[in-house]
Every structure is written in structure tokens, then in C-alpha cells.
Image 1 (spheres, rainbow, N blue to C red):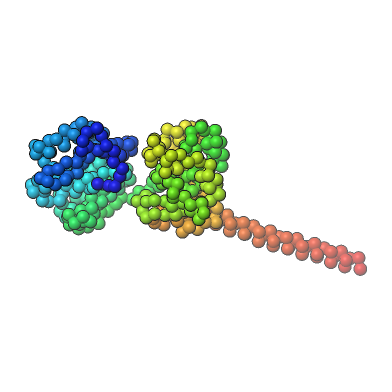
Image 2 (spheres, rainbow, N blue to C red):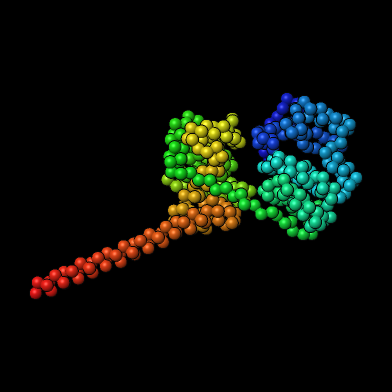
Length: 390
């Protein structure tokens, strides 16, 4: 199990760690039990608070049944299932994937995609059994009623499960590359100068201690929502002028520079009894702030579909790109994009800036030529005037 803080319950041998309920993103207790069987110490998961309707009392009863030998251990159950069917089908791989990644972000939507689109056609098959036609049929059938993005996410899940089996040495890989549908729904949000001005006014008037600061942080740094929620004071180094981003969107740790507005903002935030800069309940990592952000959006009169934090990340990137002073490689590093492809959505803004710069250069040259012509005409008039006087 992951190294996390454990919390005791009033029942012996029953404790829990804090996780996130996949369907809602809200905090959820994950219960575990400890006991001995055949002289061997066993520690295993009993169930999740909401997903499995687990309680400390139920976990204690489960523990008692296992100590008496009335109920097999989790490992014994897995061994029994494996003896019954040694094939690592997509269904079995999916169950193992979820078991090893209980707190993975997006597991709830993935569960729905698997049950709705993948379980029936592929659940009893091993990855090596599939042929391109099997996947083509699903892809074409889904595209009749679903968006290309939904189809792409579903097929990506199928590929991810197959790759998980290969990585863990459980199954052979797919014998072909899955063809993904083209998706043209990249949304680059932006605000007009008037909208940005009204937003800053609404932030200044808002009384919530964190909502406005989070919006300003996104605007000043382009940080992602999750990166700000995970940000700790130990990650901020005013001496070197850098912020360390831990595990940004599943990638390696990154560093971003602290600009003047960001430093001023961070120094204005009082340090509470929490390691987090923007702590949630009881000083723990924040998991949500949508309600407070929506209030500021409404007060500022922003469009309903403008995403408060992610949208301001786009505004940050758009302003830099349209300035013409930041190249795409630098912008990619500032946004901590893994691939330059993700940064290309802002390329047209930089192109516009370059066009404006080129146009300005043309205007300056034209003005210089015109000024020179005017000077020549004046000089010629003076010469003609002098010649007439003679």
C-alpha cells in the first residue's frame, strides 16, 4: 500500500488512510485490517468508505471472520481466481490495474468507459486475441453517436490496460497499433482587457481567503489547478527565485521562475499550521474550490464556460505568445508541457505578433523613405528658389 498517514479507529486492527472518491473527487476513507493467520502477519484492504460502503464496524467483522478462518485472505481469493482462470483477460487486467492504482486521477470516468464500451466486447479476451477489425468496429460504432474525444479516451483506456499487462509481465501485447480518431476540440480560452480588468476588480472585492489568490497565481504563473493544490511552502525558494512543481501532471518534477507579481502575492499569504500554501480542511491538501471560484466569475461577468483556473492558465500563455517576445520552446518550458505539440495551439498568436512587428518595421521604413523624399523636395525647392533669384 502507499506510504500515507494511517488513522486508528476504535476497533483493534482496523485503520484507514485518506483517499479520493473517484466519482466525485471528494475525500474518502480507505479501510485496512491487520491480523495474523498461520503465524503470518497480514495487512490488507477491507474496502472504501463510499465506493464499497465500508465502515470501521464492517471492517472489524471482516477481520474477525478471517481470523477464524471463515473467510479467505485477499491473496487467497486472488490465487483461487487465478487457478480457475490463468488467462489475463482485459477484465482481469482492469481489476488488477484498479487494485494497484486506487487513487489514480480519472479512475471514475475510466470505470464508466470500460463498463459502457469495453467490457462486453473485450472483457473475456486477452490482448493478444484482438485483431484490428475488432477495434475498428467499436470505433466506427461509437463515432455514430459519440464525440471523437469520447471515442479517443475509450480507445486510449483499452490501450492503457493492454500496456499495463505487458509492463507487469502478465500478458502479451496487442499485435497492432490502435487507430485513434482525429480530435479538433482544443479549447484555448482568453479574456479581453475589459474582462480581465473586471476579474481583477472582483478578486480584490472577494472575501474568501484563497479563491482570489489561486486565480491570481494561475494568471501570474500559468500553474495547473492540481499543482497549486499540491504546492507546499518548502517548494518555494525566494532566494533562488524558483518554485518546484512536484509530479506535474504525472511527469518529472519541474521548476518555474518566480516573477515579481508572484513573489508579492506569495509573501502576502499568511502561513497557517499547514505545509500547503493553499490548504484545504484541517490543513490537508485542498481538493476543490469550484463554488468560491464560480462566485468570483459571476461577479466579474465572465462567460459561464470560462474555466476559472485552467482558463487563466490559457490567458497567461496567450499573453506571452502574443507579445512576440517569447519563443515556443520557452513557452513550452514555462507551461511544463511534455511535448511541443501541446504548445502549438498558441503558435498563431506568436505569428500574429511577428506579423505586427514586421508591419511596424515596414511602416518605419516607409516613414523614413517618405521623410527622405520630403527632404529632397524641400531641398530642390530651395535650389530652384535660389536659382530664380539669380
